[in-house]
Amino acid sequence: MEKARPLWANPLQFVFACISYAVGLGNVWRFPYLCQMYGGGSFLVPYIIMLIVEGMPLLYLELAVGQRMRQGSIGAFRTISPYLSGVGVASVVVSFFLSMYYNVINAWAFWYLFHSFQDPLPWSVCPLNGNRTGYDEECEKASSTQYFWYRKTLNISPSIQENGSVQWELALCLLLAWLVVYLCILRGTESTGKVVYFTASLPYCVLIIYLVRGLTLHGATNGLMYMFTPKMEQLANPKAWINGATQIFFSLGLGFGSLIAFASYNEPSSNCQKHAIIVSLINSSTSIFASIVTFSIYGFKATFNYENCLRKVSLLLTNTFDLEDGFLTASNLEQVKGYLASAYPSKYSELFPHIRNCSLESELDTAVQGTGLAFIVYTEAIKNMEVSQLWSVLYFFMLLMLGIGSMLGNTAAILTPLTDSKIISSYLPKEAISGLVCLVSCAIGMVFTTEAGNYWFDIFNDYAATLSLLLIVLVETIAVCYVYGLRRFESDLKAMTGRALSWYWKVMWAGVSPLLIVSLLIFYLSDYILTGTLKYQAWEASQGQLVTKDYPAYALAAIGLLVAASTMCIPLVALGTFVLHRLKRGDAAPVA
Image (cartoon, rainbow, N blue to C red; front, top):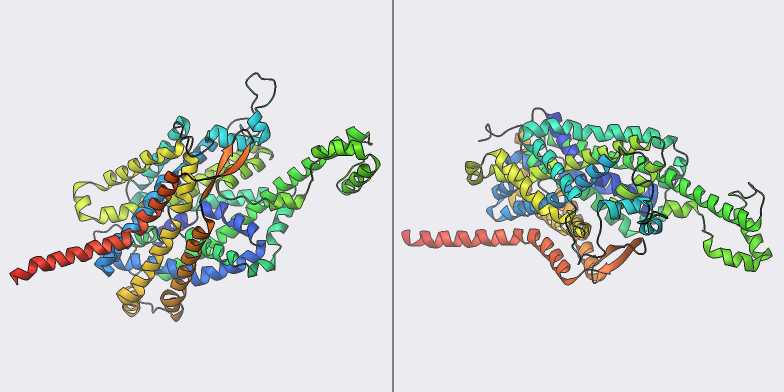
């Protein structure tokens, strides 16, 4: 059976597959946000410590399990103990949830990519209103980039209760995204192995081009100084450490079963320890590199908005008080405002509501993550660049490569256990199984293209994986160290690779990493309990901004089901196996 199992063409292909899967959108849109929130350069301290005590050991554990057991997540843990098959089932369920919503991001990227060839860019200006006497009211209250995202792309409803219709343009983009994924996974490792060279390397080419461009932008240094200036007091903030640990955990894609699936196609003698160190270091380096690019663009956007604000205030004061042109500057503005307020109190008080307080620091402090960073903040900066169409095409092409690379790993986590199953593979060829998984995921994913689709996307993004993955990896670690036995696993690795396991990996696997995961689980559970009623951000068109609303009862039920559907697999499968064993014993007893 081992000989019949397909293999990667070479070890480099496997490393590229892991990098393509691990390096995803979180590196570009979550890590810079965490840097901004938790002290800039000082956030690197908890991040790097968590990489050493949690990221690397758990990545190595998953790769070693896949390579040793030569099966997907379900088969691998069934080999350790029949009662642990539920761990693999839980991984497949979480990966299926992820595949349903994650490809919608690729659909959005396709939508923006197609619009990037227009001149001017459609999100650079507000459209005219119905009678063409001015700009659209919603767009004027928000901004042109927010309007294009919330109204033109999502056509978002005012609340999750108003589902609305499917947006056919987005639905077609989602079909295209799934077609691309299907073509990439059609031949298993044979086709995926070739595609990962592009999905892993092309984002770096775009990031390097963006870095060169970003560093030459006016105000880029303001953003970089903001990023690299450490706020050491944040090291005493427990949330900085918790977010460092969770970012490492989710960024490497632990618990989904994708890494186990990829490693199962390795030669048994491959040096998976070296691969784990390489992948985790490249993943973390990419996050830091992407942050330098992001903060140079942040700096440009913040400086542009700050100088624009200064110009508007200066023009308003110059025209109202008949000041000399060019008299007001950034250095004397506050002083002149103080003088005008005391010299012309009534006139100044009338004007005061229209005078904005311009601050570069407050512009840089505006922390945004996720889709807000990718589709609003970045597009805001791109529209003000020269040759903006070129930069827009490059940026959304990079997002697509990152998204598709992650989808390849995600679909492998679902398909490997299914194709490993003798029952399923005896009835259906690999291509048909792949097609069915893509078709079902695409059909359910259409929910996210409705007018309320973005609210459901946020529910899946926030709740489908967080607690489940922590529990899955905790049980994985306990299963290897205490059920299969750490000494037995160590001797297996030595026989397989010819290398002894160092004390560092043993200490991390047996003690430090599980304790860290337990503490993260406690934090998340207590956070959910203390939060009370769960809330979401809804788009209010009349105000042109997001407002906070309570989730309705059925949305809360859906959240509960999402969490339970994966986590309950572990005890239910164990219980089912126990009952089957008892029934078999009962049947066998009279014969004996």
